Length: 212
Ligand code: 5GP
Image (tube, rainbow, N blue to C red; front, top):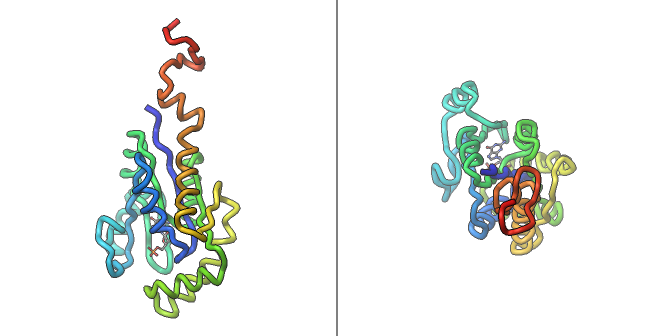
């Protein structure tokens, strides 16, 4: 069976990654989200095991030193990581996986899995990003400044990504993201190696309905 594809979505805080990921996962079967581990505390409305696995610094260090993370990074003074075992087993079973991770994590994943599809979510403008982040009301002023300054350096890495989606309008951005995932599934390599086309013998296509 052909393995699933690994999709990474990155973008500055406040650009709308979480809501866009949820919409994609609701609308496209066969793709699931990898829940990250983090040392930051839960925000209002977040649940352990659903939004993140919330763990202590000691536990995070232990997991990192045991090589349990596919990638991990420090973001805004907290640690975030993707569990290796969860992602690999789901990919092996043919499932597509979506990671919402920062640009440093994306680079690490691409190094380990060069075929990873990297998608960058852009705000329509700088001022819209600032307004969205303020409107979210989850950050104090110093954290807001930190997130805006990190956003600048993140935006500079967009050229390392395969696709960019501009989140001006949520339904349109959702369609754009869905089309990236669905197009990937129509790659010749995936269709043939996955056995979706029944009459493939080695590298050759059989063009009649009976085996020759
Ligand atoms: P937040 O605290 O706002 O949920 O996330 C902060 C940043 O951490 C976001 O840019 C998000 O993409 C990133 N992030 C979340 N999980 C991971 C992870 O497992 N690894 C890495 N490298 N970044 C992550």
